[in-house]
Length: 484
Image 1 (tube, helix red, strand yellow):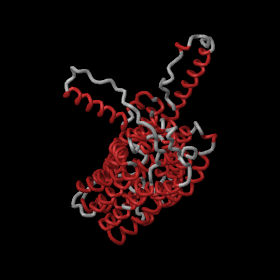
Image 2 (cartoon, one colour):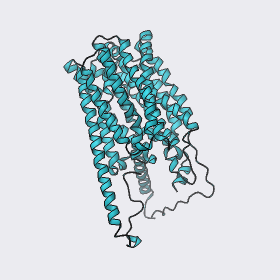
Image 3 (cartoon, helix red, strand yellow):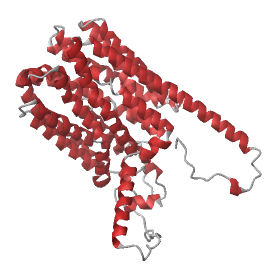
Image 4 (cartoon, helix red, strand yellow):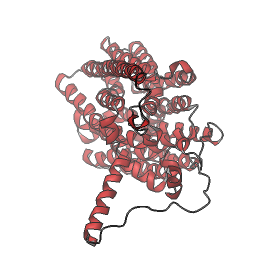
């Protein structure tokens, strides 16, 4: 019935889990055109997730142009990153209406227009709207459908595909600082924003590659609607209100996974941990270049630090992609992810040693290694703990929760810099936040897995004496489980 319903909805092959559809079956190719989709996803992630961190190259120019403080200027990348995640539910609705391909292309148009419009702004508030809201929403509409459709094209090699796609962020961190620094020196920040807007339009080209998986056409009569006729006493107005209410509830359930958050303990723990992590995870990337230039480093060498970070990610993520696809890691992805997150948080303390180039190179290499593991496993862990059918809505709710901490993180760091006049306090605070979120994930999942094993053992023991009971006493087959 679910397969037929997906076929009747037209684009159900994009919003549902193709692998779960049997009978009229959409099967994940795990290769073939999927490799082209993987390359397109890598490029989309390079232009979206890697972009906000490179705004730090223009940080000082924006401060001088608009006479803004650290806190005021930091709202630009903060709003951009927050909109990238907060637009998740809207993106999920667009995917359901338009499909992944059209939504990615729409995101490319929005992000390109947003950056182009930013080059004509006359105040920092206007920049909040153009570079922050419009460009950030464009990034969201490109990034989330690209990750979603990749999960449909790959099942057996899903861990490998997700890890390889995460190299897109590294590719962006590697190339965009070089490009941004060159454009900054040649055209200034306004000309740079205009050209970068044209670069972001390439998301439309990548989106065109992401053709949907088509289910086989069903023959025979469509399913009949067995809904009982409404009572004669009900008025038309009551029917309309009831229909609208049911439509609203169904839409919320489809695009926001509140049921997963309430009933799936693993997803709830993961969402809370990731939300708190985002308070300090991206802040060091925003403040790394200003920190280096504040202590006398040349802007070109400071931008080189972000490029080194990207090179480390590019070199390390493909081997990690192959390694994490091995059978031993199945069921252990979340612990590897949390351990890397702990290492990532502690690595921020290296910046407290000094602001010299060798010290900061050691920092970005250490940070890059742990960031590679975190980025490689982020979506794999989420796909492990929720059904692929619910992945878009689960990702949408997680993105909304992340957007709150992503929005307030950089401005809080800016307030800390304005108050203390020292940048290294920002890295200490980020270290404490990220490390504590990693410990929360490790301890919580250990407790949940222990509780699950204990419940499973008790169920096996209690099932033995009850084996001769009548079948009526058996639990219903549709009983909810934390994991699919």
